[in-house]
Each structure stands twice: as structure tokens, then as C-alpha cells.
Length: 175
Image 1 (cartoon, one colour):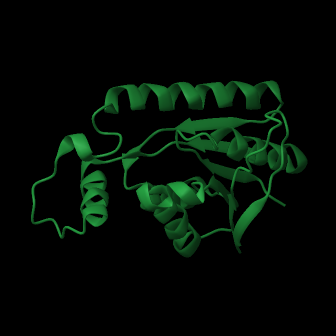
Image 2 (spheres, one colour):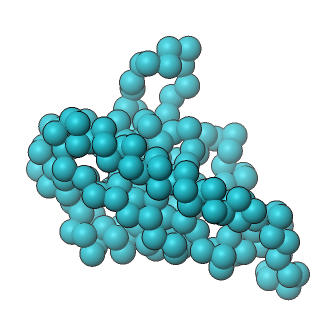
Image 3 (cartoon, helix red, strand yellow):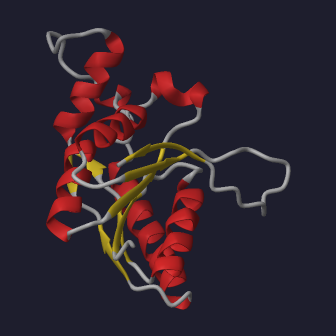
């Protein structure tokens, strides 16, 4: 059914849930994974910051207000470490995996990676409802749902008192 699954990961608490969902699907279908963490470009961060402030770009950006920019070097390293960690888990589980950490507009890049890599499915998460107002990620998942050339599975991590529980509860699917 699925041969190539692109796993779009950010550095949120739902990453493990997204990865576990994709890994389970890959094990069931003998699919290969592409673990991708797209670092937003300065232009993407500036556009997002302007939308949150209601600014059409007329005011110069304040870099300290841009999420992820003030700690960009550590964000780069953390993202790569996370990808390597998930890669080693996939390998130990008998699932082939590749990693990618491009710098670009996340929604566009996820869709383009899916085309370039020949993905049959994209698995990604979305932010908790309380985080939506502060987040670019919700618009990323919305964008990917509307523009991807393959099916998209969007999962939302369900908070529970049992940290070891796994409940892949998809919230949106685009076929």
C-alpha cells in the first residue's frame, strides 16, 4: 500500500507521537521513511511574525519576536539530533529511513519533498488547540493538506496521565 512515507517533524512535544504513527505504518507496509524537519527561513519567520501582529510588512522585523530565530543555531542542532535519534529507532525496528533538514518555507518544502522523493503518504502533527494562535505549524498542516500531491495523515497527540500510552488518533486525512 505505502512504499515511501514522508514524516514531517517539528521540535514540539508531539514529535514522538508523529514518528510512532509513521513507524507503525511503515512496519505494517514495509515502507521507507523520510524523516524531515524543515527549518523556517528568515523570510518565512518574518511573514509569520507580521501576520500575528497584523502588520503588512510596513514595520521592520524585531528578531527577538520571531519564534526560533534567536536560538536558531541550537534549533538547527536540536532538529538534527532529533532526526538522528528517530533514524536510529527506525533502523533498530527494521525500517529503512532517510533524514532531511532543509531551510525553507515549511509548507512548500514538505509538499516539494513529497514530490521529489516520491512519497505515497505524508504524516505530520498539528499543535494543541491552545497553541494555535501562537503557531505557524497549524497553517503548515493546513497548507500541506490543501497542496500535497499525495495523501496526508495529520495526527494530534492526546494528553493522558499515562505517558507510555500510544493512541494514534488521526484528526485529518486528505486523499
